[in-house]
Amino acid sequence: MKDISRRDFLKYLGVGTLGLIAKPKIPFAEIAEGFRSSDVIQCFHEDATTGNTINQAVVQIMMDESIKHLTGIDEVGEAWKSIFPGIIENNIIGIKVNVINEYLPTHREFVNCIVNGLAQMEFNGSSFRKNNIIIWDRTDWELTDAGYTIYTGNDPNTPRCFGTNHSGIGYDYAQPLNVNGVNSYPSTILSEMSDYLINAAVLKNHDTAQVTLCMKNHYGTIHNPGSLHGGWCNPYLPSLSQQIRDVITPNNIQRIFIVDSLWGSILAGPGGSPNCTPNKLLMSLDTVACDYRGWELINEERVAHGWNPISWPIHHIETAAQPPYDLGSTDVNLIEINNPSQIKEFETVTPSRRTIQIAPNPFRENTTIAFSMPKASPVHIDLVDAAGRIRDRIFAGDLPHGQHRINYRLQKRLTSGSYFVRLYRNGESIVRKITILN
Image 1: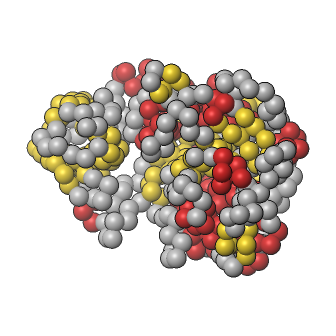
Image 2 (image 1 turned 90 degrees about the vertical axis):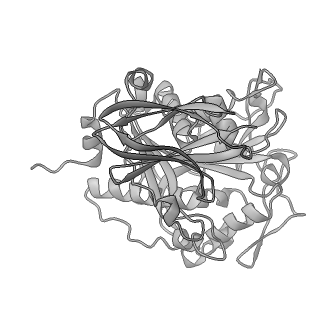
Image 3 (image 1 turned 45 degrees about the horizontal axis):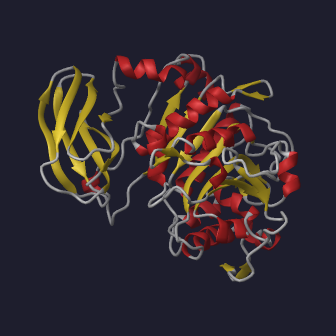
């Protein structure tokens, strides 16, 4: 049998199909000390780029479907809104990009797709203002070289864009971060101007840190990154992320991690031109899981191009998963979405065999759970809370092959928030996030 690359395999799935390939999660009942694998969305589309051009309409579909699958919410605005607890219409969302390499930045078109999704959030009947979004990195000139336009106006429908070196911005010398014993001063865009943060990173190998992904993106957040490169940047990188999580107010300002993997550098990074075209994006709520998957993707591309993989461990990723940092997990539940151009038609035909469709979501009392049975078998469907406790048995019984819809009504009053519907069949567990409102 002829060996084929991972990308060729995905192409064989066909344009317009949605492929969800997920490693089964650890059953909630078997989770020790509340830990479980972290979802990482990996969305691929062979038409995301053409030559040196980004097809933004295609990338928008990729971004929208990724956020919906990550959150389990089928409406794009509500999916983004669920990422930012307590958000109100006047809050500011910062998007930290990486533009130090103008030949391989977080691309403007890629970030536009994030902005368009955020603008679908609604508050009192009005859309979230794009002017409440700040796209930023270290300097104005690096942003400009990467294709961004520095913001100078007051249009409510235009996101702001500028660097920490922009007039009136600068670093926050009143709030030093203790990065493994080194005082590092954060950008005031992070410490004072933003209520929430999106980490929009790039896919690169690195001669010192081994990889440049989400954690490394924050070297553009502080005034002295050159002081934090010893020991392969370990433990400076996890220490910096921990300080951003625990010291910057409000705590946990950083909500989501996204890697622009349309192009990548997998050899001789972090500078220079891209040397692979994965046509992918990565998205997760876990910085460790996202970076771990980014490392895997770099290695997949290296092997496909005939180069040796970067060996594990990537020390700062491994350290970040351990005490005292506890930034996330290297146990990844990978959810792959492939060529989602025709996803709307696909979804109206039949649920994927590996997914659960829940509508409405969020819901107050009633919702409908739709799923497919590849063959007859016993089925258990449970409502599980974030701590892994079963809160309600939704269904238990034998079901035949085919499509099924279960109407579910809450039998008890539960606290508003995020829960999970877990379907167990044929030895596999499929989990979908839901939101209950009271």
